[in-house]
Amino acid sequence: MPSTAWVDGRHNHAVTPEQTAAAAYPAVREFGNAFAEDARTLRRARQLGLTGWAFYVAGRGGVLGDVDPETLAAALGFVAADAVRDGWEAARRVVAPRQIAEHHLAECCRWGRDKFEDLPGASRLAELARRVVVSADAGGLPLFAAWRAMPVPEDGVGVRVAVLGRLLSEHRTGARLMAVRAAGLSPMEAVLAGPGGSAEAVSVGWQPPFPPQAPLLRKRVWADALTDRITGQAYRTLTVPERTELVELLGDAIRALRAPTGEYPKVR
Image (cartoon, one colour):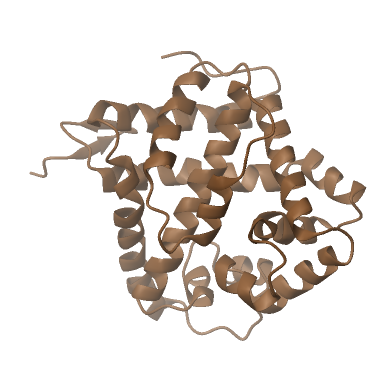
């Protein structure tokens, strides 16, 4: 019998850092997606004279400075180079990339203040997430390193939750890019082999015809396990009970995002 197990999202006996990374992943992924798709975030893009796509590409990548599109595409990894170039060049014609990144961060702060300021357990979530983010090795993760170095323009527990959730997402994405290449997959193949399949591949700029998905799945499973191993190193800073607590608090935050306005999950 294995010494570690998850039952209904809770730990049984012990939880390894790798298992914590895997258990946190659904919430961490949703943190990144929810902010980017928020209606007020998209409205801010329009106010700057940008499309939502240009704001996403330059907002996320502008932290690296005014780099060429090929460099940014290499850092983003899972977005097709042509799609990166389209968004990046459209944005650069309007606003300097670093300024767009600053607007992007300000919108993340606004989103966090709106969504998490009154969330039960938010202070504890921010503290545990902060310890993971601070302890993470940024080697080979340029976007994560650059975003972690960005000064946060305002304080407040909701802001900290949102920014730290964003950093956990960027850390996971960078680690996954490393793992995918180690598994022998191209970034496009990794997206294609995921649950979104060809629809997700098209949404981030890859164009058909695509290779068959089935032969890629075994490599994708190996890459996911390696991603958990790389990402999990940062969770070693927490004790076993703290790892479980962090996963549960991340889940509470995501449930709050899905709940009607003003409703929050009950404190455990």
